[in-house]
Amino acid sequence: MKKMQEAFIRTIDNGQFSHAYLFEGAKGIGKAEMAKEIAKILNCTNRSVGEGACQVCEHCLRIEHGNFPDYIVVEPEGTTIKVDQIRSLKSQLTKTAMESSAIICVIHAVDTLTPGAANSLLKFLEEIRLENISEETVDIIHIFIFLIVAGEFYLKNDNFNEILCKLSKDKNHYEHENIALIFENLHSPKLINCVYNLAVMELDYKKEDEFFNIARKCTYALGYTNTPKAKEKLELLAKNENELIREYAIKQLNRHDFTDKDVEEQD
Image (cartoon, rainbow, N blue to C red; front, side, top):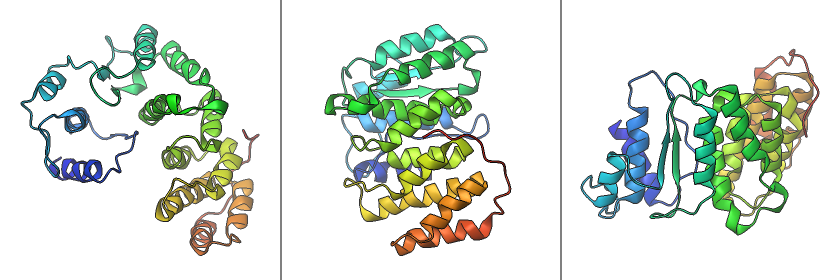
């Protein structure tokens, strides 16, 4: 826990903090506490570079006691997360942060979302005008990506995959590496074209090593998909003009047999 916290402090201080993190593991290992600690570090008014949250300023204390307006926690009511909870969350996420630069949202036990709750959140995502993302809506997209990663339970929904593909093509946000990670985790035959297109997309805002992280995750996604069409895309990447991309693709071509069944894709 301490080493992870120190790693997050370095990431935050270096300006490399992402808008999306997924904490997974056995019950009781401290996932919720880590999420709360990160919220404190981001909002602490007394923190110095290289240090954790002070734990005694007004922001730290209010986050600890659950009454900081820009730190939203969603937990099951009874045994499930219900649709009314997601409706309330949607209302909060459409507002501007009140006392900090961004709204931090943590969803616990996403596997307890009822079908209605999951569909309500997906519908909210579908309502974003992804084709015309403006500077004013970029922060909202960041929040959505956080929810998407946290909500891996329902990522196999076809409507959700369509949203992911639209986000992966848009250059007006900064979450392409997180989307590549989701593609890697999903390794869905329906997403092969989207994964390939992201692997070769030119993104001006990315440093070169960050661009290769995206390409690497995409080649892993294609490898894990393990279908003939995925193999075709990897063979194209193996001929890419960039040496690193070629190496990533060849490694996956040598690692998998590509005998799984292809399905109709979403692109």
